[in-house]
Image (cartoon, rainbow, N blue to C red; front, side):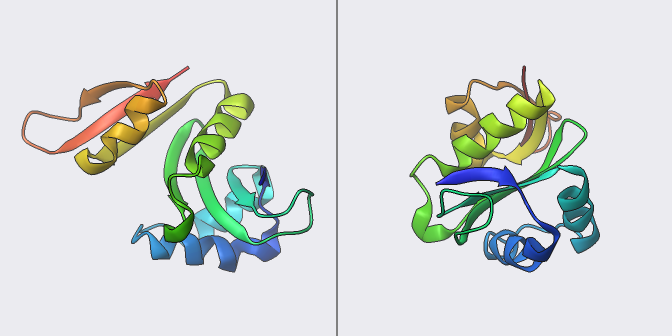
Length: 127
């Protein structure tokens, strides 16, 4: 597996992974990230040019807008590798997420707090 910045021609593959995880994100955001280094991909290849997109992370500034891994490849460290790569590039990342993915962010040692007292959503920060 290799983590790198997505190439603009990989935007459809990235959208396929994000759509497969039922995440709502504008294709323009993903495309802009591919152009400015904010869209990362984990691929099955070992180089900059080969391999299938297994997972993707889109970060705007330091905020993770979306992260997803192909269903059959979950639990293999791909999401962790994407977050670690974003941390290496940004130095700090934040995320907002539902309770069902809280264990993922806890495992990555994010500082987590509820968004508000009435929702089942959380905000996490890792530096």
